[in-house]
Length: 321
Image (cartoon, helix red, strand yellow):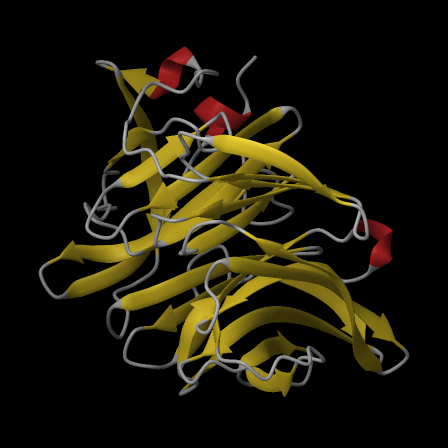
């Protein structure tokens, strides 16, 4: 697995022999925006700008969204965390699953479906507003998301996290950073051992800059010193990074964050996209919901006082020749 810094002007490599990771980080961040080196399909480029259509949305939500996450595995679930506190789950039709809860989260990572203690569940790792690592579970026999402990022995205040595939090694790979040291990413794997979850630590790596978000793309862990939210959009050999800087539009990169371009999300007949999204998640291959090219979900204010999660079709990127 490689780790890279996002939107960089100076890069240097070194190898953590103990974890077997090739690591790339930058000393300074670069603010330029350019056309990605590997361009999306021509249908996505309108007047020199990348444009993708909004195709569906949730009903108006209870308030401003702080984070969103999608699950992989059998089926798909959308998790929505609110700035004022609260967590809700939705299906890919935008309909709510179960009852909302009052959990107070500041960061939420993409989830995984698994059979735990003989029950099929979907698990989303997250960070509470007091910096505690937890997981949020929904599935058979539950009428609302449930909160459980993660077996990660982290006593320091956690600031943020992201998740990636663990293959045959476990349920998921997690990377996180803390308030006390926001320049170090710690990675490991959550696995299942009988009825228990276990944690296998992989590495603790100095980034060289304050981390604001991270994302796994294939076997590469990408860290950003600028983006408030980020997501990986991967389907076969087509891969892109999506990001949002506070107060800005959705952005896309196809060269692991070295250059970025703004994405214009085109409104649908009955769907309005937020101009300044607050959260993003994505899947290039989705087993549910009727999205053959995958889906990007963004959250934000779609009209004055109205907040929604909007589903965006990235087929012009993921299904290009």
